[in-house]
Amino acid sequence: MKVLEAKFVKQFIRVCDNGYKKGWHERNGGNLSYRMKEEEIESVKEELNLNTEFKPIGAHVPSLKNEYFLVTGSGKYMMNVKDDPEDTICIIRVDETGDNYQICWGLVNGGRPTSELPSHLMNLEVVKLRTEGKYRIVYHCHATNIIALTFVLPLDTKVFTRELWEMATECPIVFPMGVGIVPWMVPGGEEIAIETSKLMKKYDAVIWAHHGIFCTGEDFDSTWGLIDTIEKSAEILVKVRSMANSKLQTITSENFKMLEKPFNVKLNKEVLD
Ligand code: 13P
Ligand code: ZN
Image 1 (tube, rainbow, N blue to C red):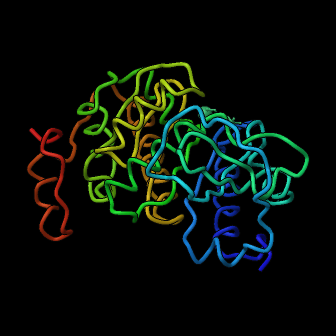
Image 2: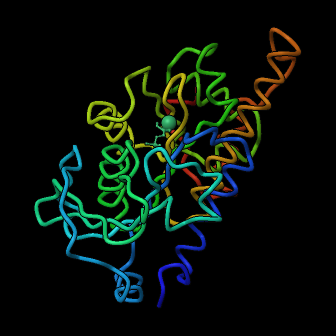
């Protein structure tokens, strides 16, 4: 099968396009990665070139050795992925040591995988181990309202999560552990990747102050849905804070606890009073 005919590739492209339409990907902002399944690798094998050179990842990911990933290219615009996937995305393979990668398909006009490859692969490694292989996706975008809140809320998991949960009843059900927060750091390297992946041991969503958000999940829909839910909640909070200095009423800790049984979720106790 041709790479572009594969279902996971179509789903990947759809997330890029939908994120662009949401306004989360100005210029080359944001990136996406997907850890391919055995049968998916097999199905597109005819198009994979394994004779390309290896380059350093900039991170050590031994638990991802010999695995294949579909990732966006560095400097590429999400706006263009749908019309020109072969130019903007690529399939890479991690080598035996977990230190290097090679490009097996895509980026036909040159280039390299996203500059956030260390963060993507370190996060994918952490969540693969945490979920016994279930989680396969890491998605990074510059969602406007989430970024705005990092200027006015303390960069504290409890406060941030609590404020986001209060903005929509479904929030604690969708992200019961809450959100992790990385303070401002230089993007694109191993240092920010290490800090983010430490938080990914616990959280499915990690906010980068004054930059954006990283989310992880089992499939494209749930990972997309997680960012969409958090950003929607952030938008409501921005509106509430623009209208008034304080809330007249809200969802209480007792209310949150009442959601646990009917929705079969365990909420992060650290966020509740
Ligand atoms: P890339 O174009 O290298 O993916 O970088 C975009 C970005 O959002 C960096 O954080
Ligand atoms: Zn970014």
